[in-house]
Image (cartoon, rainbow, N blue to C red; front, side, top):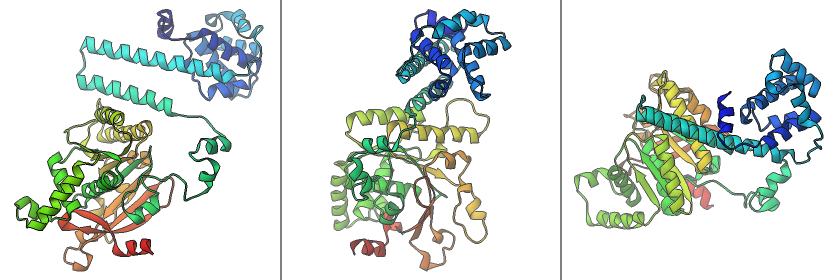
Length: 454
C-alpha cells in the first residue's frame, strides 16, 4: 500500500466522493480533463488508484484521444494497472448514474484543499521525525521546513485565468478609477521625483534589487528611501541590516535628516545649530514607524516571521529593506554558491508576494565594471554570483557615481545615476541624482524639482 494510501487509512484529510465525482465527470465528458488539470495534479488525489487513473487520462489527452471507459481501461491495461485500479467494474462505477455536474470547480477545489492539508500534515510529521532521529543539524532541518513552507505558500498564491470584467470589478474604485490615471493606485513613493515617474513607485508584492559596487552608496540610498516612507508617508518600514549595527544605521539617518556632517558628528565637533538640528531630527525620527534589525546571519525564515509579527501590530507595512543579499546564507546543502544565492533570491520573491509588501533588497556587483574599459556603468550580467537575481527581480536598479573612477575631476563630484536596467511593468533608463558626501545622502537635482513645481 502506498504511503498516501496509508495516510488516508489513518484519517488524514481526504474526500473520496469529490475525487470520484471529478474522475467520473471527466469520463462523461473528456473535455473536462483540461478544467481539472488546470488546478489538480495526480498527487492531489488521496488514493494511488485515483492518481493512476488521472495520470492515464492525461496521456490520452496529450495524444488527442477521447477519454471514456474503454479508452481509459485500454490505457491502464497497457501499463498493467487496470486490476490495481479496481478493474473495469470500478471505472464503470465512477460515472454510472452520475449526473453532469455543473459546479465541477467546487469539487476540484475540495480535492485540492484536502491535498494541501495532507501535505502540511505530512511535512510536519516528517519534520518531527527528523527532530527525533537527530541525524541532521538543526540548521539542515530548519532549511527543509523553510523550503517546504515557502513552496506550499507559493502554491496557494497562484490564481487562475480571469476575464477583463473580473479584473475591473475587483479593482479598487471600479471602472472609473481603472481608466483615470489620476485615480489609479500608485506604488510607494521613493522620494525621488524622476525615479517615481519611471517606476510608479515601489509596488506591493514586487522584489526590487538595488545593486552597486562597494562605496557607491547602496545603503545610503536604501536608508534615504526608508526614511522618506516612514517620516513623510508615515508607513511602517522594516530594515534588516546584516552588515551595519543599528546604532550606525540610526546615526546615518539622523545626520541625513538633520543635514549634519557625519564626520563632524563622529568626532564630536558640533556647533549649537547642528546640535539643534540633530535634536529636532531625533524627535521626528523616534515618532516614525521605523523598525531596525541588525541580527547577524538572518535568514529568510527569520525575516518572514518578523515581518508577519510587524504586520499584526502595524496597520500597514510600506517597505522592507534587506542589506544585503550576499551576506545571507541559505539553509541546507548546496552544490555551489550560485545555487545558494538563487535559492535566497527566489525566497525573497515569494516573501514579497505572500506578505504583499515591496521588498528592496541590496546586492553586490562583481568586479566587472571596474575592469571594463571605457564605460564603467554596471550591466545586468554584473550581478554577483547568480543570474537568478535578475530573473526573480521585478525591478533591477544600479547606482553609478562617475567620480569614483575619475577622482581628479572635480566637475564630477556629487554626480550620481540610478540606472533602472530591468522593470517588468515599465521602461528602463537613467535617473540623475545628487550625492551629498558629508550627509551620506542622495537628493533630487534642483532642476528636477523646478520642473515639478512648474
